[in-house]
Length: 348
Image 1 (cartoon, rainbow, N blue to C red):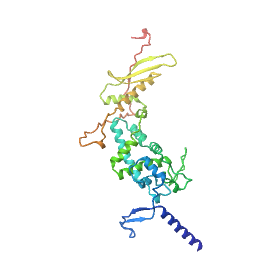
Image 2 (image 1 turned 60 degrees about the vertical axis):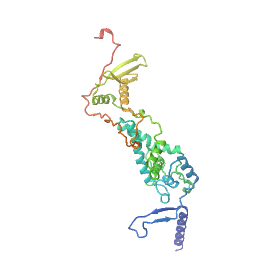
Image 3 (image 1 turned 90 degrees about the horizontal axis):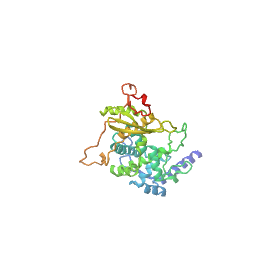
Image 4 (image 1 turned 180 degrees about the vertical axis):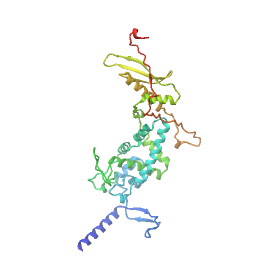
């Protein structure tokens, strides 16, 4: 009995300690519990919004949201204090949707001919987990440390931490990876801006921190069969079949030959490639021709979300070229090399 009384007293003390540290307000609209009505109920849980680390980070990020919302954005749903500070899952979900919309709108409007795979790669480069983690690191965001008391870490991203491993990561329920937790925080900040301000404020924040980064879309392309894809493209656009021609060469019989091949559709030169073999030069010429088509860019474009009543719409392309890999016998690529190394007696 004495042990039971001591346990009950300890629980009461712990509850009193927690209630003196955290303070918040909730609204309960449930009609199933007579103990809670649709009135504002105050709970003794003061939110520690005066932490120097938290205030400094909030000022550094420059997000136009209250400090308590910013603190909630730092608290992952796997955090050890999620019951006291709330979770950023709802804010992160909203922020993820807003990020995806505005960044997709920007890329598709600026590069309307991008293939879907390149579009996804560009989106990942802008708003993927690694990109958002890098952005959080630039803001100076610190992550939760296992060996430090939670009360001393207010202002960091709080989450149930699990360390990354190369093979078979031991991730359990209630744990999160550091990069995912950092990305969730960035999304939650954007969601909080949209709720506290409006979508224009969220878009301005995204333009300043996400879309202001330079992305070399050219490096995202990796073709496997550019010759066939270029043939399909010319056929779809009503152009003559592409023809590869040798433009220049040097050192054919040396250890370091160089061949320059151009790919033409009628009299129009579509692309040019240079390599140590004619096959590779032809491959690069077709790939460069496709890049020139897919990377067509609209200059000074007006985004639909920024358009006024006089907006006339944006250019919408036919889409990428789909190559059927099962039946390719009727779509050869003609190659015409001007051979000037043959002896005269073999030329007709």
